[in-house]
Length: 384
Image (cartoon, rainbow, N blue to C red):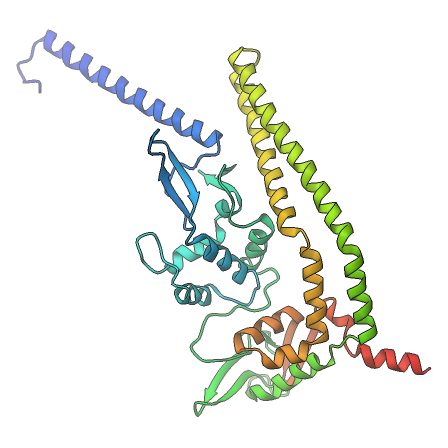
């Protein structure tokens, strides 16, 4: 500490020490920034791992790493899958996470804000965001891009079939339709502890509320499910077609996987050669950084495509088989379903659900619109 009587020599030495201290701090800052940028360029995460991943350290080298959490990753993927249906709100999703006993590393239930951020975090599909810029990371993704994009569409209101706020009461049609008169969401009410009513505006007197028994509207929905039918001969033809195309689909998937594996291997070799060129000073650091970033991004895309093909092998056949099964047994499945399952089925089959007084107005999603009274229509055509 300088005194008020310090001479010129002491002042000079003090200023020199301050200057050297500043230089040292600046050098440490530069080293930290360089280290951080180096990690980002190599697809390494530089902060706390999100839920579903774990921060680890190599016991020998002491280097930090991120791995998939074997306990929580399954439930994180399930959160995305549930939300992508468009019939589950974030509050309802949180309730389910509590039912699954999904907790943070510190043992706490998932907070609403954590869940909100989780659904928006592209880290789970292989991309980390640092200072607003996306970078492909080097860790195994928990979900694919298609599932992540589907969740963002739902979050932004695109393609949502209805995911209103959660309620304790068992309303099967809660939030799944709008009032044709007012354009607002139809609400529900429970009378005498057991009678459920849907509340909309009266088409004849729009200023007046109308209480429609839920059973009356549900009967109309059940009638639609009864009308969805596939004749036995058509069902047999579809099943036979699926069986015949199965081998062709497998061959296509295997060829695509082999091609992507070759490209991924070639990109790894190119990255090695690029490093050699930098060491030999055949290219500048800027050229190296640009080319390397482009190659890493492409390799991330290839790995994402690979994962999609592995997951998609037979997926089309399974999805179409499930769709055909649902269409041919829709009433039976709907009748036996729980309230939560009924809501999913309604969201899967119907679109633009509206209530005009006590009358249900709707359109059916494709291809369900093709299956309405199909057996009866075929019988009429055959009789002519």
